[in-house]
Length: 124
Image (cartoon, rainbow, N blue to C red; front, side, top):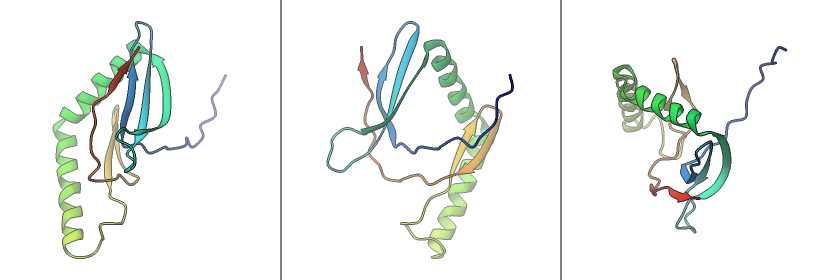
């Protein structure tokens, strides 16, 4: 059976809101920061095999530790800072962020800046 490739929906989240780890399946809930709430407001929850979640975490760390990724992020930040200092972009405009996935990287959609980070709440 051939899977038809379609454009997948993209959902923005500021940070993880909850993490439920089990021996076989785990659930990660992502949330957005709301000025009226102390904790992130959940916007998406997904479950996957715990082994796959662990592998994904390892791959994320590998991408972040990759010197090429660090250079690309530094270059993107420098260009954005130059554009902001020159008045070419304003603070309320979308920021360019670097997204990494195994074996690939790309510039993607806006990312909110200055959002407070909160610790994950482990649930059972």
